[in-house]
Length: 350
Image (tube, rainbow, N blue to C red; front, side, top):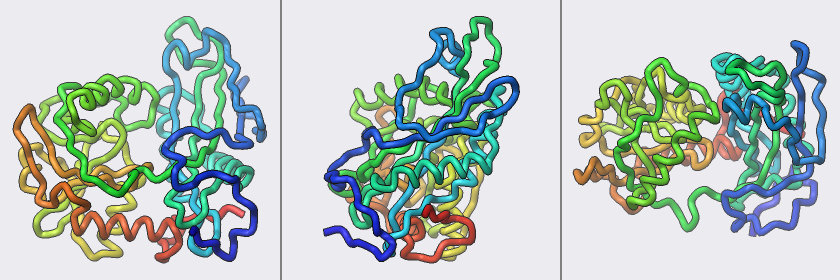
């Protein structure tokens, strides 16, 4: 049975919350705003999930699109909240600037997220179900562009979909491989959340899956000696003396989850933290390894394979390491309202 908190006063949709999976489920309303003649319109909520654009739209011809990923939760006392939306707004603004797209104002971004979640509150999974409401803000070039240049018109949208727990049947440490492909070039677009970065990662991840691995570890493209990230998550390492270390690089996406975990490690758990370049040769000396991102918070890594050479983390293949587990429990406790959050981290949606 799922617990019903005092603030959870509206009827939820009749979904099998514990078994909905990490898939798209259409919800009732979404937010849409259009950019034309140098300005964004006021934006509207709509029930129509379809997007109509010209066959020559900039997004279709030259992949001019950026997006964000975030979640809304039902807390233990029944409130509906989202987590650090200001950082998602700022990151999308940075992504837009890099692709010569107009910035959607950060205050309006947060307002659009709140309105979309509020309009679909019946789809926010109940506390204790293991499910959450995934939020996808995105923006794309919408007018016809045949020459290689930025679009003149854009559309910003937000939709939501309930998703099940990322780990089905409990947390199982991943086996990952060193990729033969490069994720991002120095001074390229690895530091922004652009659709083009994810499109080029698809062949690499499918190759890893065909070879029996769960994910890739990408090394830096310039020297192939330093750890960068996976196709969709940052790395987090724990040393044998419990220091939390994350790789530093200008071509790594600045994960909001990773930044939050580093704060939790230092301020809540009293651990030493360090963001620095991490040589691949150091990996064998770490006690724990995890992938951090919105979907799973932390995915533990048990084994890393470099073209037949196996690195087995001391934390093993049975579950999360001790420090990784504390980080996971503390951050999810903050998100679900069981642990007091730093100021500004939790935004309540009424």
